Length: 199
Image 1 (cartoon, rainbow, N blue to C red):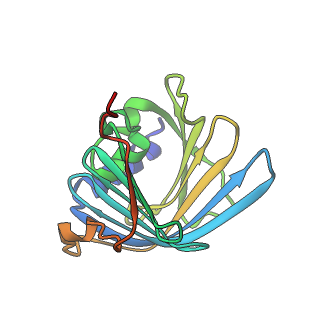
Image 2: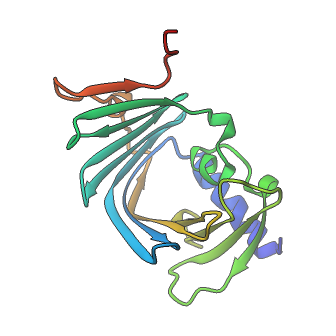
């Protein structure tokens, strides 16, 4: 890592370590390499320490995902379904957990500065130090002034790219834990994959 990159990474980690909660709009573009098409979504993301995260998709269709502790909840109002799955937060990559103020990026990635004509901030290119079955590369566009992430791109093993741009991010706004509860309407089917199936 060059001294410039090392300083920016340390500032970025420090920004999220001192962030107790944040709320932001987002625009997600998923580029499918195989189908050569891009699916775009918009919504809001809310986060609260430790490890509570809510993604509220508005377009193209309303959906809600909540990460709470060791469970992830997915609510689809159109299908009237709520599914619950287990997630091992210890297995989450530092590319995600640094947003929680955990996980040191430099322990898992070789980090270099990338070239980017359209970037508003500095582009950091993160290449996994060990073979990583979940993704090939992570790219983070970082605001050099505030050291917050403006845009995150995860490159899948097949070359597809999942880009999330954060819009109007506000930190330490005092978000309550109740914001992460899902109260689906009566008649919603609940599929709980965390419970053992009876023989």
